[in-house]
Length: 446
Image (tube, rainbow, N blue to C red):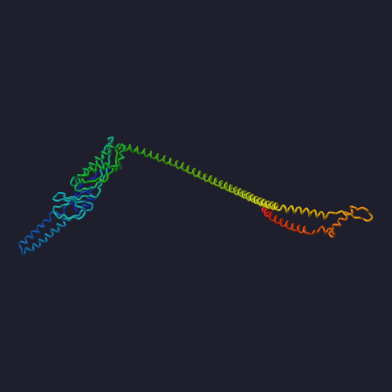
């Protein structure tokens, strides 16, 4: 089993060229959030400055050939000044902050970029990484639980960032911060494990440690450090409890397997029942469709039959109405004709009586003309007449060429003319009555 150890934090001294490597990679696995840079200027530049000043003063005071020494002194002094200026240029890397001091006292900070420290008493004491979240691991051993059972190990992981470099280097420093942080983490872990039962110790893994992070932030605030994240990635129990928990875990896994199997069986049965229900619903819907189709068809047949019966009844009704109207019209026409005829007969009653009397006279005349008449015939040799001879002589008397017959058959005078006029008027009336009766008879025929 891999053995976890506390992360180590310290500050190192390095040249300006190695500062970046120390801040990013550390020193042999040790975290390095603070680097103390070596001053490149030193005191070697004082000698050329003093030599240049000496030559300049000597040349100015001696004159003559000493002027060449003064010029040389100026060159030496200028070279010393250039070396001094170049030595005062420093560059602060992006993501880091330089802590500047003057006469050994912290005077402020320098941001990323190029800076000029022209005064010899100005120095950069520390280069602090203020942008990187530095990981820190703290395994706590023998932390007791609620039943006072010491846990084998609780690994605590956090990330912190230096937000106030002056407070960090002034109040604690990197080496002392390692001790303070490890002590604070152990106290927080032990407080958390004291409220947890041994059998539920594994619940500490990936649990919410927001309260612990808040506690650590309160402790580290005065050092200019902020805890940005924390969790418990691993918890190890004593060997005896590990076996016990292994058995419980095996039983719980078997129980979970049985539960999954039963859940699968239940799901299969549920799916089968749902399929049966769905099939029954489909059959019911199909039967409902068939019943609705049959009902609609029956309704159509009944509607068609009712329509046919209604049509036939309407046809019969129309026929009856037509026949009734025709008969009524015929009866009305006949009644109208009879009414006209009755009126005509009523109006011509005197004429009819006259015609009837005339007809009687004509019939009587015809009978008189054609009736045999007895004649008394005297025969020679006999003294009395014979009836048979009278009847036998009747036809001879009634012949057309007989003078008597002609006299009776051709009446003359005013009576004859009046009879002719009466016949013409009677024929005209008969023609008018026939014209009135013809429309009524035509309506009856229709």
